[in-house]
Length: 274
Image (cartoon, rainbow, N blue to C red; front, side, top):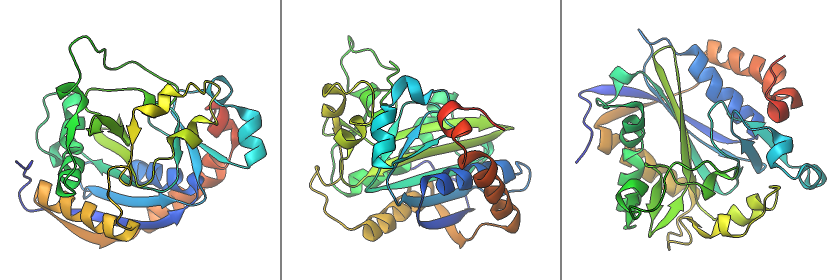
């Protein structure tokens, strides 16, 4: 059953593979430039090149990352504007959504809006014949959900998506000025073990409960998967997607954020804005 939105058009920002600082600056620029009273809702699809590690908004890099290893590897580390744990981004598709609560089906709570906004991902995975469910609908009653972990994919939230019992990707949300911002990952190849190698706590069990499309037998290329994701989004929400580019205001905002924020270790490693 779809979460129907009558005759609504969303902007589609279909980005190319980009570096982590640009990706995070663009996401925040879309959020900062969004005017609740007049802006069309936005769906952005993008990827990461080179691979990068993103840390949650409230993490301190020195507390969770093996700084010597990541520096020796020349790995980019960027800080997200959303919370949660660290994620290694490689061989994945990533989406971001910017909208108002009124532009999506009615949610009973902030947590329920996660269910609403990840509905298209459930549709996408099911079209690929994957056995998917939300964690809250699957785990046993004695399993505690919502436990915070430094490594994102080791934790389980109520509306994390499980494929064949293992966590696939991750999603995070932030609210600002009656605007919802949400982004998340769709892993094509499972790089959890690689990401875990850059953490201080390298406990191998953190990666065992994760999976990816290729491990589930889905061997489609990234472009074909992108088209499937867009079709699932359109059909699930009954909306139109209108291809667009960043506006001048959004581009200028992204450039400023890239220069002053996401290009700075003060923000990316310490969470300090200058």
